[in-house]
Amino acid sequence: MKKAIGWIVLILVIFYIGTNPGPAADIAEGIGSGVADIFRNIGVFFSELAD
Image (cartoon, rainbow, N blue to C red; front, side, top):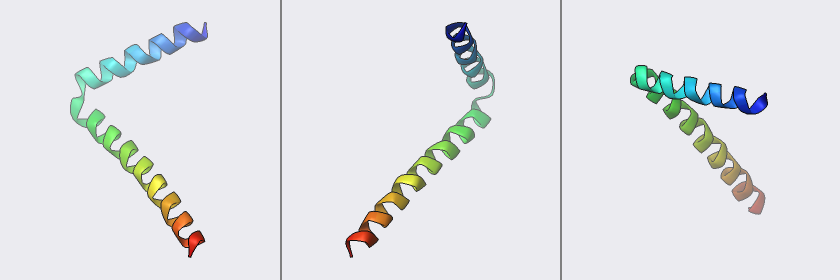
C-alpha cells in the first residue's frame, strides 16, 4: 500500500511540473534556497565555534 501511494504521489508531482512549470520552478527554487541557507548557517556556527 505504501509503495502504491508513493507512486501516485510521484505521478502527481510529475504531472504538476508538466502542467505548471513556472510555479513548480518557483517551489524548487525556494526549497533549494532554504537548503542552502541551512548549510550556510551550519558553516557560520562551526566557524564561530572555532574562533
